[in-house]
Length: 347
Image (spheres, rainbow, N blue to C red):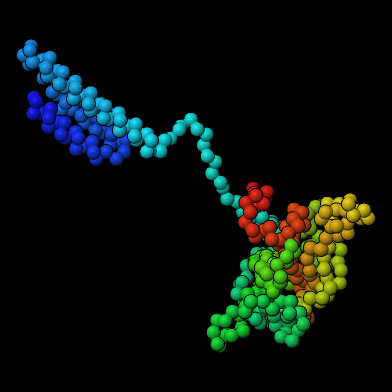
């Protein structure tokens, strides 16, 4: 029995040195102190020994057991310090959940309103050919408005040098649809656009725009006004009014800028600067978009008989619409990825 105890002690010391986790420790305890372990089998043999030997071997086995227990307990204490503890009573840690960006939400809401009016949504190309971005929209190379629209050209190859650029508006989508489809048409086209603008509180070299247009027989300006009036009253407030101001766009004729009555101060003009509306600055009106009847040259460029068909088009900046609706005074807030700002609009 003495040799067996010595063998168990040597095996235990070897196994003890290889412990790496609390699971290993528990497995070792079962191996040497479990009910079916070799150690317990030695204990079961004590009743078969002579009377004078029972006390001797019983004492030696208890000493061996106490030694093993002491070493296992010391290792368990070290494990508690080295291993990560799990407190099941501690409150759970909330996990941050993502949400749709406010600009995506506003763009989706705008498109949904027009879709309910019968428009279909088509996303165009961000890398566009110069002809679609300018010439087809009645903006020839010598046109002065090119200075405001000339954007980032791409050096694709010597053959196509100066041919491709990052689109400066979503209007090229209008051209592509009209060239590929026959009237009647009613299309809404959202997407990113690029301009050579200095970044400030109201401008960015990249922003989001939504272009809408419709082409059919007997289309007139009254149809345009009706569509826009429905949009602003559903998006902003049922009580807003429209105001049209003459303007110039090369791709529409006649062309107008569209204002809505301020939905915050209800178009109340106030002279006291301290009491002026924070959104309209006391003017009572808010500029929201530009529009007009599609220029005959644009229809002709797309292969549409401008004597038979008429159309209207409008374009709006998503950032501007969002800024007006939520009272945001700096366009850069949309792009800084400040979670504190974005969380205000999470659904």
